[in-house]
Length: 270
Image (cartoon, rainbow, N blue to C red; front, side, top):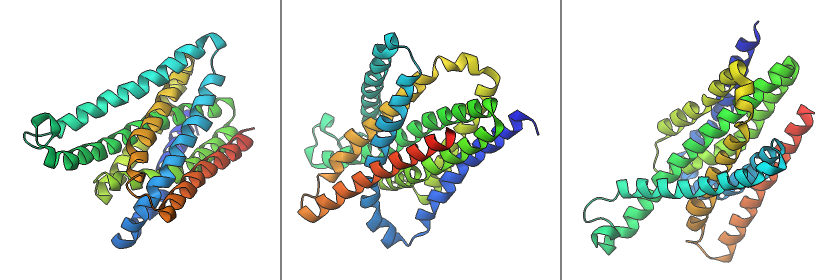
């Protein structure tokens, strides 16, 4: 079997398998699932921040020379500001005449704003996942080009690493108003960029090598923005001690699990 076919198979399996494993979350009864969504949001915050700060950003900086550190940091800043502008555009798109602050109607502004922010969070999750999965595809292809066995192990490690994050992503998409079928469809669609990254890397890894760190930090900036700007504010709606402790515990659990899986993946790759 050719190396290209192996890369296509394992990038597809690595991407789609993690989505389908996480989709088990959608099989729960509606009442139970709706009760778990707020907990999933807290977990997702920890997972997204851990992926960004523990995985993507350090890996990007490891791949460049010290003189490129400033340009990478600038890319993170530009990405966060860019996502802010994009979110503004998405909110404005949902802002119809008489239903937002810009049109002087304060009564409906809160609902319109929350609806716009929720929908934009879903868009950012899909966009961020697509970039992240594309980079995963490049990394899997690079491992296969080094050694077939290393490529297989790396693709399985990527799938294991993605499952907890995909669970959080489903929670965010459902929270953003997506139906179960659309949440599955868009997650699978985003996962297929893993295949695209793998195929492009196979044919032009040398050309992609220099731009790879910038893909990594751009994906990181999207995850940071989602967690900090869209998700964390929603947790402040409930301030009682029990809920606050649950939120802190689940955020910590998301960070711990992602960091643990990241460490296992690095150990397997080594």
